Image 1 (cartoon, one colour):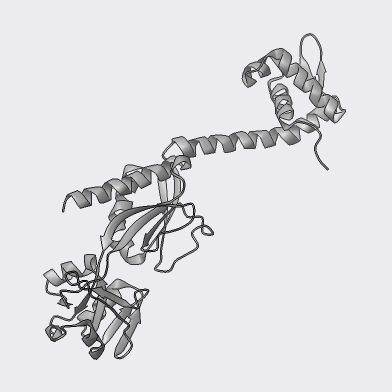
Image 2 (cartoon, rainbow, N blue to C red):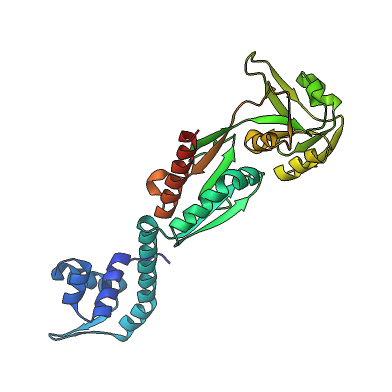
Length: 301
């Protein structure tokens, strides 16, 4: 049945009932005593019930008023608690942030940032979910999402953090120097790391592009960079690896670069989050922390 009374008038009644005084309730609500009295009378008229007994010295609840107060007072207390929680969300650094990130970028770039952020803000918790698949970030109720490429999500802000290139690598003892053009990659055993099942290569100087789809000689398919690099180090074949992972291993002699003049087009690591004007403080702090950290990384180069 549709309510024929004002919920705000009911809130005024609950305040009077809790305080036991129109004057104190009016001060609590920040309204004139005459206005409060009129609104309580209007509520009783709308309900066609008497809720309060009034005399010159005190206010008391009728039996019906007591029932209304017991049922509705708890609801307004809960709404007040919710309001306080929402205020803390907006203005205090506390609560949980749900984050989704790719497995490899998460372990390479983001792990230390996450840990340092938690050290700086001890009342904030991070719920981290690492996956190389594109999850439904709306359905999973994510607060912040990190993605490499394909950043467009309606009503989400995408901030670029870092460009990543993929390069082809092999075992240091393999005669990979004999590979002089991407067309020759199909002549060698290979390992694929999903979702990068197509090796997109470009020659930066000439602008020539070549897409290699490993099929012939495919030895292993994985979905994690460390498994890929271990397989290459075991001599199982060549693989397509992000430069942030491959370059340190090449410098240490653990991998050898194939086709050193070829690499992928830049794939950008993005951070996605909702409307910047209505973010909880914990998310705003996290976004700023990540942006500052990646800016510092760029400046240090």
